[in-house]
Image (cartoon, rainbow, N blue to C red; front, side, top):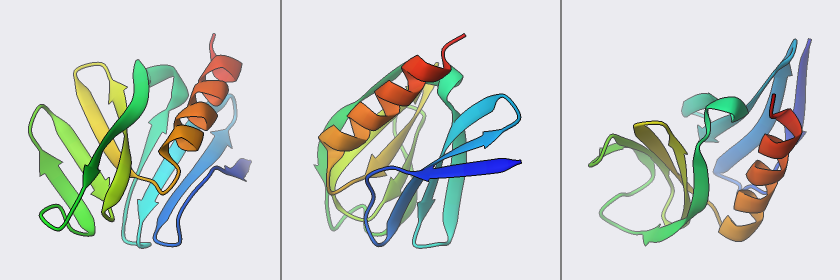
Length: 109
């Protein structure tokens, strides 16, 4: 059964918690078009990151340093998973970091 719980999000950016069986993960979606899921157990670090702007625009971006961007512009959060990372736009990056960290602690083995 798929269980979803909202995290702080924007109208265009959607970050939710999903659980399928005993696997918990963050589901990230931009404008209902681009999406990915990240298992909380795979996250090695989560932190506020620099603001993105006009250059990045609203879309999926392949960025330097093995990073994929799910961006709508403005403040962002970097979620590191081993040797790669995901950069996610958020109007409340500190709240999003806190929510992901809290869920990581609750799903740790």
